[in-house]
Amino acid sequence: MKEVEDLWIACHDLTHQHGLPERARAGLMEAAYGLRLRNARYRSIVESAEDEEISELTSTRDLKAMVEANLIDPIGERRPPRETEDPFAQASQQLQLEV
Image (cartoon, rainbow, N blue to C red; front, side, top):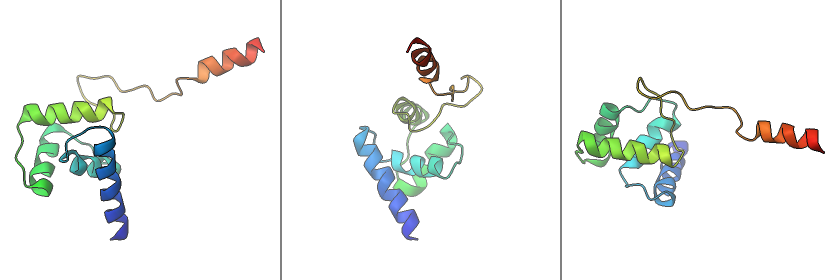
C-alpha cells in the first residue's frame, strides 16, 4: 500500500512540475503501471479517481500536455512511434572519431 501512495505522490509532484491539471495524476498512475492511456480510458479514470467528468477535447489536451512534457509516449494509429534510440549516440560517435 505504501508503494501505491508513494507513486501517487510522485504523480502529484510531476503534475505540478509540468503545470498539468491535478486530474492528470490518475492518468500518470495508469501509465506508470505500463497500461495504455487512451482518450476514453483517461476520461473514465478521471471520472472515477477525481470525481470529475471531462470532455473528449479536454482529455485530448491533457494527454497532449503529458506527451509534450515527455511523461507519456504517443502511440496510436495516427502517430508514428517515438524513436527510442539515444538521440546523442550519433553525435558521441562523431566526437570520438574526431578526437
